[in-house]
Image (cartoon, rainbow, N blue to C red; front, side):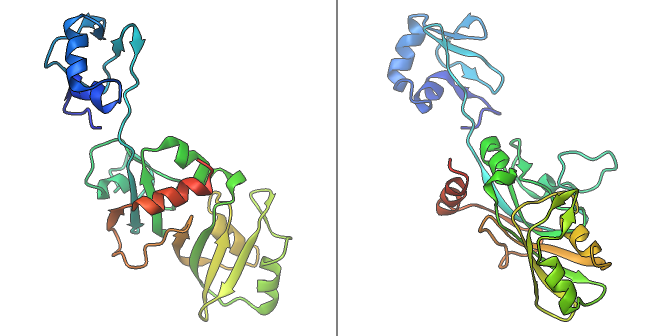
Length: 237
């Protein structure tokens, strides 16, 4: 339900499941509906910030929940505003509703990113207690030795003053897949700093079972119903 351009009060009450449109008209005629401390009138439109009461009970305005998957390009911020006029992630989505990224990718990190207005889902997907799987492809300045890979796959790695659990797999001479179940600031880069290696290129290839391998960089799409259900199942919603 989008209220940016307004919606007639009888349609609103119907979509909220409160009454049929005809029943809503009767409630309005009988002065049972109040909008912003004034009796509603037939045909009146309501907007996002309006307060609606029916029989002295407030009706919650439920916004349509939206879920987008984007293949984040480089030089894009995962914030909602920037003082230096750089590109932000929501600039790439043709939707005027309030949306926000689930977690963050660094300015030059590319790949899978979920954009939504579902606060509960976003909070749980980024909370460490749910151990949401993240997979990155990292290209380094130097190859890792077998000893270094063994160390990084051990329980001895400390990142941001906490033990870090990850699986490092070599896929090319200087390229590695990194699987994590928790994301913190510059996490992948700090893992490789443990063995004095620098990350030159980083892409997230999977997040919570989602990938964007067939999506051009900078493109986005709405999540499919079964994908939304899967995400909610992962975090027990």
